[in-house]
Length: 252
Length: 95
Image 1 (tube, each protein chain N blue to C red):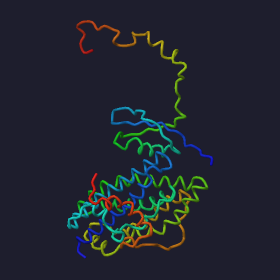
Image 2: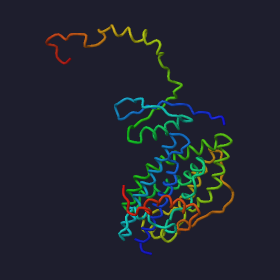
Image 3: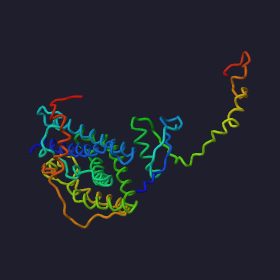
Image 4: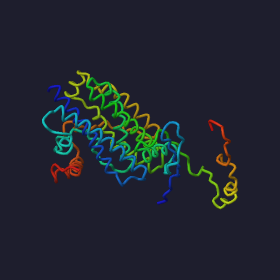
């Protein structure tokens, strides 16, 4: 694998994370528990889709095969999406959405802090813009986790169940293979295994304050980075891609 | 289901340095911190501000509309309270 191929693959993985999660959050539009949260969630959705756009643009340039960011976002099949399984999991109730966000935001925060120092100037620039958005996302999901976990019996039980259901997708955030090895050696991306301890510590601090517990089970799922997804992604893509599949090349 | 409403908060935004905070509207939130977060999302998404204040609406003490007469009308007849009431003598500079 060349450096160029590795870079393309890496950008695609991160762009897919942002796009798929952004799409998931956009499903809350008009369904938020209160008007204020409806706006907050869709703001975050827009941040993520904006990040995805920047990453896809760069990926398309790196690939240099005449595809643009829209082709990458809308015209691939399920197996070609490389996002982690966590981001494609369904919204569930508001608490589940916040827990999914908590696990993701804390990872992104540590990652993008490092990506700001990337030797690839374009990635460093994207990271510098993105980190400000992530700092708000992490505040939003962390504070909601604390309030729901340490709220009523009903809210506690619901988010506790979501922590149990979603924690099995967290290890995949730290998935690394040849793609990562090549880019780490070039100083383009950080070795994420170096901040796994910090990630666990940060998550635990929030969960402790929220009176929530991580399950003891160690069973972890992965596959997303190789395009092997859960049953949920296909349905999501059907909706995400509908317009471009039905009216090819449509612009608005 | 007994649906309890979150308290109402009044939101004040400072649009830039040097200007004072201005009332922009209200929203609901479970506590002060979340009220600031919500205000950020609802009222500053188009770069309207650089500082937010929130005050729980219950803490705002308002004047009684039925007392508008005694409160405000006496001022109407006191034109001498406006600087324009006074004529500036000829030759006075820097006024």
